[in-house]
Length: 257
Image: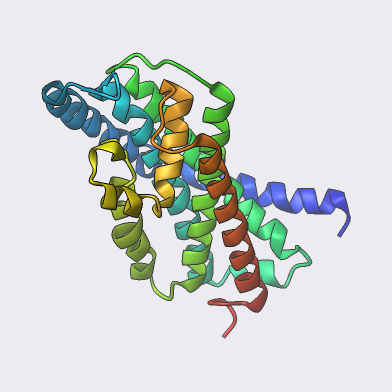
């Protein structure tokens, strides 16, 4: 395929994905906004007033970056896993497989759709947070880069989950038993400096810790881990999951029987 045809194929998948989640926005955009608002009220206002400051900032300001990243992570992941698995379930994915569209373009299209939803929900949550605290921006390019890379990473994770899933129940296993624990243990609600030394070391193997802290540094200028190390870790995971997804897609894992 020539470059124009590749771009057309990519744009078609992306537009389809964006139309998919915007068409049912009461199910895809509103619930995360309501959930994050409850987090702001309960953890930020009610509990935060008793906790006081953390790392030199009031508790609400400290947790806002983590909550924004939580919304980006869950929604970019959920968009791809639900969309691609639905294509598998309806067997319409076979139309893509028999077309001359390269696997890399198919993967990129779905990932871009997940990134669009993740960033969209992240923007909504960011606007909602302004009703509870004043956001300052320490490093805008780092903020944008971290959000985009995180959305790409978890969109790839959602794609792999969709390939492996054999029934609808399977697409909820990873978010429930992997993403949720890692998110809560990823420094969203606390600084890992509060943990004993052993548990600080354990926290360092949690990839979400690097994403949350890189984004927090972009907003507040503070981080529990080196920002450059965080970006390297995110890039490394993206490369790894991209390779895994392409190999699985090329072999027809979970698609060809």
